[in-house]
Length: 93
Image (cartoon, rainbow, N blue to C red; front, side, top):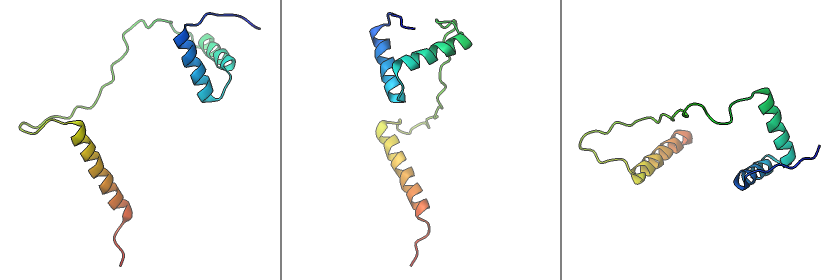
């Protein structure tokens, strides 16, 4: 069945992009979304505030400099180097 619906521009752009990324026609993605909604209806507007993501906290030692992007980047590079050494195994002569 053909029908016309009004969709906010930004929502349409997002849906069209997602359909393209998934490699499906937009009409098929919309139909599947409606099927899912009818099987598992949930309120369109959240009734409760979304849960906040809990990030791990890294305690700071007194007197030590704060973490910066540069110090984190350097630590990641050191870990990558250690992993590379571990995977290289013992040196063979």
